[in-house]
Image (cartoon, helix red, strand yellow):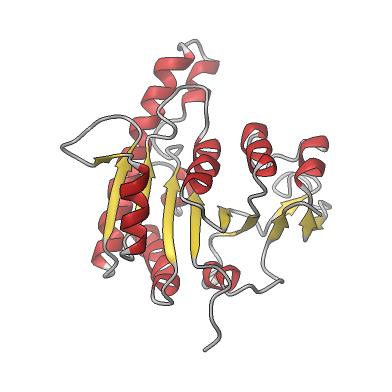
Length: 240
């Protein structure tokens, strides 16, 4: 069997991805689907770290738009990511993948605090590590947290799972004529303000030359295809 192209990855999932066909909350079927997708690369010996958002439960920036102060709104969003992380951890464990949840804010009864050397050691022991509670600070999205953690653990690539096939020149959910982009540079994403990830996350990835792969989460086998280095899956963002 061909060896995977990457040995250590970070997978970024939106909270909305865990809803499945629901309008709110966590879908057990979607948890099982995600766990099976992660298992497919874990069985190859790939070290997997995960950051999951909390938008299926609470989105801080949305709450701040109708009057709530941004800092407590973001703190509530961080707690939502912890709920999702614990649910995902359970699903992964049920699929046979040992996991550890590490949080950026202290909650020792539920998870470990984020300690970089411990996280790396878990990965080396083939445990999936789920980083919860974002960066621990308000005003930073889970996209930025994902890029930050990916740099810290020296992940070789960040996989950004979305609802569409990759990056388009406009929103394909609103514009049926949106054009798909297979390869693009960080700078072009910034200049064209393509809303793949927030601008802070893209800038941080660019500054540290972290490749990004944006792909459709709902395509069975897509995570494994990216990890194996297939070029016809999603969009690649890097220095071109």
